[in-house]
Length: 161
Picture: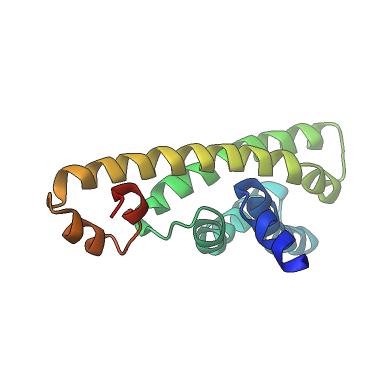
């Protein structure tokens, strides 16, 4: 019973994103907080944790959330992180002006940045996968059997074999 519930929950992309995002957030925020503790300015601490987070999160988000391990998406993934970094650093700057503790400010921004990141990744993932699938339709052979074998069965349900 519990296994069925867990399988059903993990079928939802946003729920998987939040779960994997929790792991990624713990990784990224730990680096950010450690660098702040070491006396590094919040903007540099955020930059370093973002760069390391890109490398760590690319695999976890791509594989576990969007079921997509294409290295060709790394540039788009990096663009998403650049956008969220710029928004995040702008928000941290505003918090800094109002003398909010930078640890607290980073924690406050976790959820809004997760929502922004999900929206951007979901948009890029869906549009890019659709474009790549359309490109395959034009480049793959017309033989349905060969086409299904080459795509490792991914499209077998679409082909109704």
